[in-house]
Figure 1 (cartoon, helix red, strand yellow):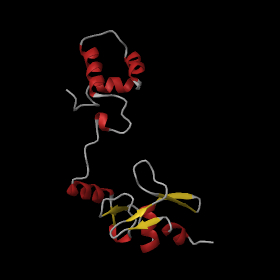
Figure 2: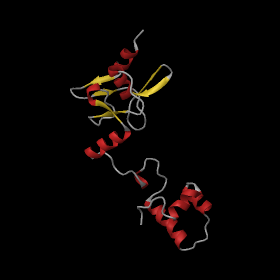
Figure 3: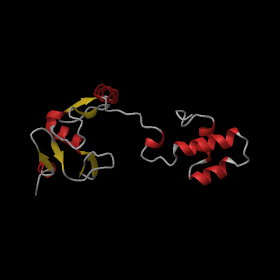
Figure 4: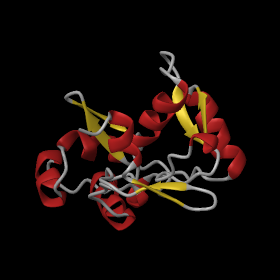
Length: 153
């Protein structure tokens, strides 16, 4: 029977730089690995197999910015703030808002229509608008008061 380390590393394809996870990945591109009845991100397992436990409050970050990479030499520990700062310094973080969001149900055009209805006194309830656009009525209210989609004029 294979050891945990043998099982894990057998799912890695090593290149000259990155060691890419070849097994299952989650929607955001990070690999995941199941063991002892739990599932963890592959980069975290690579860290623990190489260096030991991850102290509470820290995350495993990538120097190479390759979410599939599990090369321990490309990983480092930091806080969430450290990881965000690293992304900002490398220009990797983009503002993900509005229709750029993965699960966005509305477009900027929809938002303008919702605001037009509100601003021009069209007698259509927030609940009815919510049904029309496939969102919650509180979303309609927050769009109308510009607490959501505030970047849209």
